[in-house]
Every structure is written in structure tokens, then in C-alpha cells.
Image 1 (cartoon, rainbow, N blue to C red):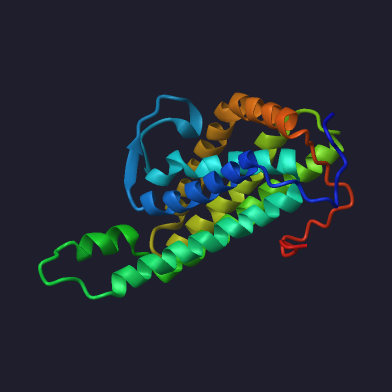
Image 2 (cartoon, rainbow, N blue to C red):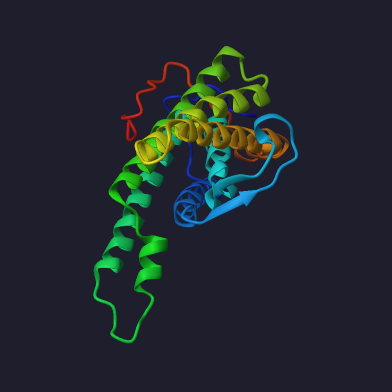
Length: 242
């Protein structure tokens, strides 16, 4: 029997839950690493998706963190999702710190890869601040909205809840990152175009992944015998360890 109203209990840490958590952290860190590569996507789709788009390579993997965030919130509840988001944030900060240490260590005299290392793994403080803030606010917004919509719909219309929460979360993420990272460095109309393009593609990613999200959620609820409804739960994101 699926256990629905379990708050304030904490979900049992199973092997599958550990796997989802590790994947969430991995996709976030690797997205930040490959994000320095710019790619061009050719599209014949109508509207904002039409035409060539220059985007960071992270567009291929970063939206998966939102899909996994949806799964965590839907099955295990906002309380646990909140902890995973903070865990991913601190793991990412640790990875960035390690990259910085590697950059500052003096290279061997015969090694000529220092410029490449700095290009791939080095980040300016402005970009780091934009990335960290956008991730936290965007992921928490996505998880919080999904949690509240689950209560309002009594667990129905998962497709609507995941897509709407992604529209808000990814919109906030894109707006914060692009604005903070590129304000006063590129024209304002280009900033707006970048925000809109990334937002549209990320939401389209979520829509296309909806059938897979359904399959994962159905499997987990049955396997874990769990379906958390966040009745009476504080949505304060700072209560990560409550």
C-alpha cells in the first residue's frame, strides 16, 4: 500500500533514492563543466524555436536536474528534495573550489595545458555567483510549486504540475543567470533573447521528457511504497536539515 500523508516522517534512504540523489549532483556539476562550450542548434520548428541558436552545451544535461527534482518532490516530498538541492549546491561549490586549487598550483615546466585548464575549468566570480544563485532559486521554485500543486490537485495531472513548475523554475533560473552573467557586457535585447531562447528550449525538454517522468514516478511509488503529500510542511528552503 502506498503511504501518502507521511510528513513529518523522513523517507527511508534506499538504494534507488541514493542513485537519484547522486545523479542529481552529477548532472549539476557536469553541466557547469561542459557549459563553457558553446554549440549551435539548427531548428525548423516554428516560433521561438526556429532558426540557429547558440547555446551552452549544458543545455543537453542541465534540464535533467529539474526532471530529477520533479521526481524527488513528487515521490519523496519537498522536505527531502530541499535537502538534495542544498547537497548538490555544496557539492558543486566543493568541485569549483577544487578546480580553483588545481588552477593555482604551479604547472610543471614541460606542461603546456595551463591555458586550456583555465578555459575549461576556470570561472569568473561573476559567472559563479550567477550560476549558484540561479540554481538555488530556480530549483527551489520548481520544487515548491510542484509540491503545492500536488496538494491543490490531490495528486492528479502530474503532466500539468511538472510542466508548470518547470516553466516557472526554468524561467527564473534563465532570467537570473543570463542577467547577472551578461548585464552590461552584451546589448539588452540580446540578453532578453538569450533568456527567452534558453527558457523555451528547457521547457520543451521537460515536455518531451514527460512520458519518461511518468514511468519513473509510477515505478518509484510502487517500488518504494511511498507517495508524499506535504500537508502542513514548512516551505522555507532554509530548513534543509529540519
